Image (cartoon, rainbow over all chains, first blue to last red; front, top):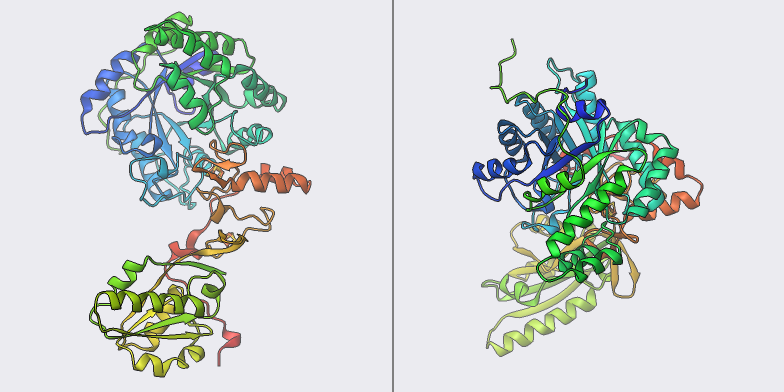
Length: 320
Length: 222
Ligand code: SF4
Ligand code: SF4
């Protein structure tokens, strides 16, 4: 085991994994994490703790990940390249590992012009592939990016993102290959609504044998309304929402849009399960954590496998 | 070349303070070419300032002068007389010219009349685009002559992020995705496999991150 995380164990045992997302609050209130954790505990193998998603300031992903861990939800701490240089990244990586966090997702991060501090300066000292490689070298070679050695390495299960719907399409498999070569253990993809296009991307992934080198979790998410479907289709760069999905949402009876959204989500999960090389799903129900129970139940993802009990958070011990 | 834009008129006027004799000092090189601070722009700005002064019943005098390059001492020296007679200089040169003038004439207040924008080129009449951030360690040989440091919004070095759609960058449909351009260029040149190599972290010491930079060429020193 590279990290001994629950997610790693579930995937290593060959189970179809399920992860979800837990967005930290725009405040210092730890109760929000505890509340959301209740909706996820037992329904997923791990939950991603987003890192100032869409460049809006929220509670630190490392702090929130620790709070989730205490609640019994295994966190996948997200880290973007937007706000930290390599010094701060490595510092946070050591810190999260010391707190018992075992999964890390490495991202480029949304550009700060999308967020609530558009006048801020970004960092981008490293890109996401260089970040993956740095974490792998820290873990496997006990080396900092500068080459210096460390005593106790961060045992992390390393994740990265992939967007099969971004351009250039033919490069998307190449980019996944680079992430695998850099040391990614698992991949979570952008939201899949166009299953056919996703399947074409997976063909390219299998042609290179990448599904055997990294565990691929396909991103899914329930849509709340026809308006939300249209917004994602037209306004969010890198998400493909087919007309058929928009039409189904628009055609839902009054007050039944959410139900239709959940139904579409479950159907997509069923289709994804049958695609060779898909090792699980990453369910993004943003600010709709209550939906996770129903989705996982309806999609036949319950009960979640117990490969081993997730150990409760321990107080950090001094290294002797 | 260096590209600049003239500051808003009211901002320039707001910098004049108590000065009675104001020199508008243009530069005949980069800022002339991008229509921000050459002889013509000096003349236009001076007449607008005179008109505003008239309207406000002010008594400021404005003189105009343009040197070939404000960033070189010998050209700057040609403006010595004009500078001496002024209480304040509005420099329409780039930030380098403003600083050179301020350094050459240390007793004279020198204020910037333009915002120095970027290192770039003209795309078509009236449109300029950034090309280089002077990172100090050029990688254009590896990227088909398209700079990922200056032209990718995230300065990524290993290919396009997940926000690249239809050739455009996630930040705006007006911005080309540099990595789409690099990908297309290298693919057309039969060099697509080079994009599979992982580019290691960049050493930013040669960039502004390493502190103010300086070039010392012993072979040229006297
Ligand atoms: S790589 Fe550096 S020096 Fe070369 S064009 Fe880009 S910013 Fe300028
Ligand atoms: S869309 Fe292209 S240019 Fe924009 S940040 Fe991503 S890779 Fe860079």
